[in-house]
Image 1: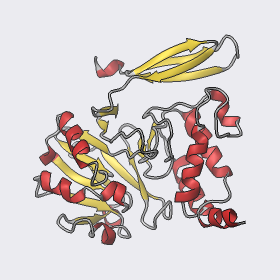
Image 2 (image 1 turned 60 degrees about the vertical axis):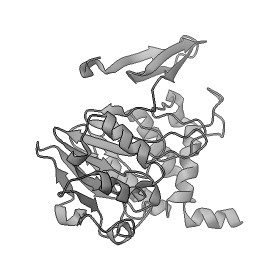
Image 3 (image 1 turned 180 degrees about the horizontal axis):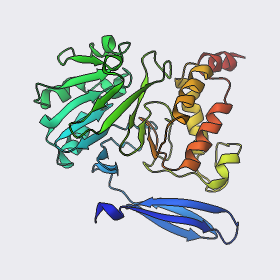
Image 4 (image 1 turned 180 degrees about the vertical axis):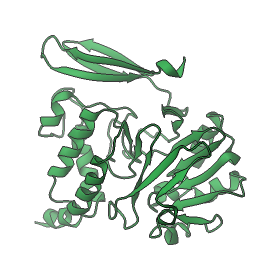
Length: 311
């Protein structure tokens, strides 16, 4: 199927029974089901394959239905060049590399490995990647606060600090990745990456979630933006996605002040899609606003959450 019709838009489809209006953006791999006045979106994707989520951007992650926490490495391909963002854990290396190969990319054409912080779930397979990528120009990009820790995974490839690069990386074509600092969300050197071409924002742990019924594309209902989240969603009797996001941020982020700062930086950007390291893609403005609104409403985050839990 041609890429030009990969994204299909359904505007303001109205539920006969509820009167609620929603705006849907479906990609190939979705099935639209209308039953009992409720619009459902069923995913029909092969997670054994790389999945192109935007122009030249591939999800190359690993799926384990028992994990409860999913990691999402992303490959950005531009012409003969490629960049891998948050490459994954040691255990996931074979899956990630196989998916990279299935995109048609020669690993030798991977120019940069970007690590938005230094946790093992994204840096663990670094030495394995270096062993396969036979490129003398390979460099690792991260913040100066992260690089000393990344050296403990491997000191083979040169490390570049994003602050010495003007907080940006450009492909030969001029396609530009911009780096925005989000300190203490959740580590001192944390940052997020914005692809100017597709307006995709790679947000690392921000917008991540624990997932009992994960899917790469997961939509919120219209009423979620004004909902008081519950453990079980009354609309589909599944776990509430906002609650799963909330639980993740309460435990992983250091403080509400740090999280609010990060969200304020994100709200300044023109975003088409959010691609977090954990959880599901956020592909609509409605969903993005609902999640940000809910996260901003949280008070007990990080150490404050720990203290509250002791009461």
